[in-house]
Image (cartoon, rainbow, N blue to C red; front, side):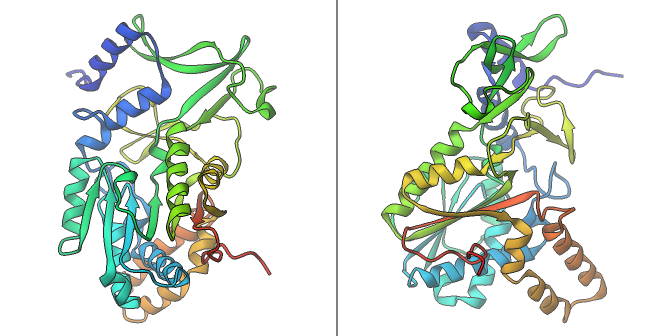
Length: 367
């Protein structure tokens, strides 16, 4: 039996390590996901039943329909400005934006007609899928958030921030050190290695963490959140972030590789061939958005948000004119989205908006 082919990115990583020494985890993650020729997201469509994972929009149209309701209500609170930039970060196959725009055409036609779609996507493969999903709609593509034209903005980001590179710090006997990726010649594979001690690299509350503890930060995520916050402070708008993660900083290694639907793959085994993710630090995102000038709410559990937006009522309406097989698919999808044993509590939602706007739907304070 022939040995598995070596991932095309691996020799490039070996060369980089030979020239520069061990590379930080964040650099490894950025190359594995975004290398222009051999990166995971630049070479394939990873979504759906034939991909490595299934996101909420692929599970059920109910997710996109609920987010459309959120957008319509926030737009109304913004006093219905037009033209409007309706944007998405990391739009996948375009399924979410297609469901959102289709729903807006029904419930808020003036908004749908006056909005231009803006998709922030770097993958040529996924851009083609998005163009097919949004055929005939007024859409533009951008490589970066700051390329979206000025003006009133509604922004959604579903399972986007978890794929941004994270720095990892490892608690050793010598103190906290940055975790790096090195080439282990004896084993013939990539391996983790700790760099020199970095005093002050982690919050003081974790200074006494036990040896072997790992702490993660994402400068890329907080920098982007700061940009979004500044944009919302300068012009009317709001943003909704939905992802899996934690509410507050904590120690723990959350870097994971997803391949073939499995989340227990070795993150160093097949660079460029597997998705790499890490849990989102929602407290850090909220702080960066606020520092940029936006008001923030949450996070709240995804199940709570979708329930507040009427997912059960919409399910009942669709089931009233569906076949038994369709009803089963709709009910199964809704359960996955909102049940605690599904995505309902693992996934969190964070909202940000221009200061002075009321709390967005699903984030209203309890009375």
